[in-house]
Amino acid sequence: MYFLKTVADYMSEALRNLGVTHSFGIIGKSICPIVLKMVDYGIEFIPGRHESSSGFEAAGYALKTGKLGVAFGTSGPGGTNLLTAAAHAKANNLPVLFITGHQSIKELGIPQCQDSTSFLADLADMFRPATLYSKLIERGDHFSTIFNHAISIALSGNRGPVHLCIPFDVQTELLEECNIVIPERESLVSHANIDRVLDAINNSKNPIIIAGKGVNRSGAHSELIQLAETFNIPVVTSPGGKGAIAWDHPLYHGPIGVGGCTHGDDLLNQSDLFIVLGSRLSDMTICNLKRENHPATLIQFDSDPTFVGKILFSKTIPVTGDLRDNLVYYLNNIDTNNITKREAPTNSDYTEEPPILPNLSLASVLSTMSDLIPYNSTVFVDDGSHGFHAAKWYKVKKPGSFVFDAYFACMGNSIGMAIGAKVAAPEETIFCITGDGCFMMLGAEINAAVCKDIPVIFIVVNNKQLDMALKGMEKTTGRIDGTIYEVPMDAVKFAESLGAKGYKCETAEEFETAIKDAVAINRVAVIELLTDRDEVPPTAHRTLNLN
Image 1 (cartoon, helix red, strand yellow):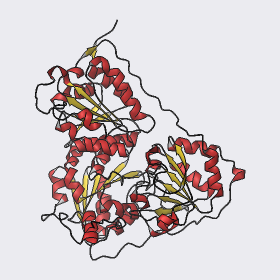
Image 2: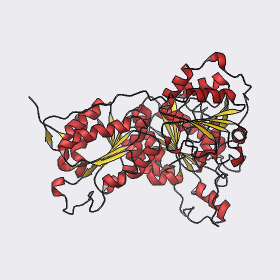
Image 3: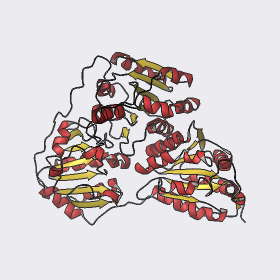
Image 4: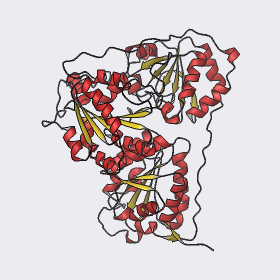
């Protein structure tokens, strides 16, 4: 005998069985049945202040748990506000289910407020290029097939976001049965090129490992170290790969590219073999690599083959599939008696001296920050000059504890990411380093954290300008149009108006005191750093030519 349950019941039960404990979004008429039903099934709903931030929160939750994140938006603009977060999740291979509402299918063709149909804002179409899969569910008896397909794509292979647009009457439709299949993780290993890979490493004279964001996403930190130590190969990190290895490991030679160090970029230009672990080799990573110094051979590990072997003029050996699974397999199949012994530079001091400035130097603050915070911390870093300062100067002690997206580079993403991560890992101290430009975009989301007692510590770098745009435009065009707001923000007043604890810092000593107090009080805190407006960010490698 079957008991009738709604589509919303079946979805909520399936998400609970997938281990989802929280969802994020802004409620509205067209999405009410599913949101309320998920609460009934024990999945806590975190209401946001902007759908974009809610999408980032779901991404932070997915990153920290390794499970599915869930973000909601109502029909029309509630859904379109999630698009940026969806593209960010796609760029970062984060499994997030974006669910948007839709007017009842029975009322299709009747103009309604917040239209999501093909007559105005077709959300299913809009989400397709920003996700791995996007579909409108037009009937209840189609739900299980489409839902199973969506979560399988999100959680398998090249993980990433998916989107389902579910009409109001479909959410409440009664079904006798619904077959939901919970996907199981598969080990995805590329066996074909193992001999070519090991031969290339053994035959190279000056190999280098480029650790990208994929090391952090797959949790392959110990495998990275084992690979480097087995062959005695120096390691450098892309901007997004920062934190793949501890800052003081003897084989670590610093960050490269935008926000990189001179030493690391010099090694890059002297290498005959790149072993690339989870990096697309974007312009943010190889901006200082000269064309004539492209290595003879490139070994590129990447779950997404889109750019593998297509960026450098090098003979490429591709290794697709899960990075950690592949490294485990390769390391287990190395003949230790047949390894080329080489002298690799070790204990090299890649660090540089922070500038001495009349006012507070962000570089000097970030170079000492990891000494002030608990070891069990994760630092989420927003995009802008402050992000590349962090990539250059911050000293990562715990591998995997630094999260920075320099690829899609969406301003304000880390505000929500940090909140979602704290929900997923309440035992960790979670920091967000953001700028005044980012903070004024999505900073109201700290109120969502205050309301639900999600104690994230936000560090707002306030140099009273869109610094990265200003410095880049000034250098390349001689103009700074649109980079300065005549009335600068007061982050402390703004934070206090939203219920957070605020600290204003103009010296390194004030910052140290604020950090210690913010950690101790265990509540939402905003530390405003009033930094020197003339400090030059490490972003001058990418230039703009308008001629």
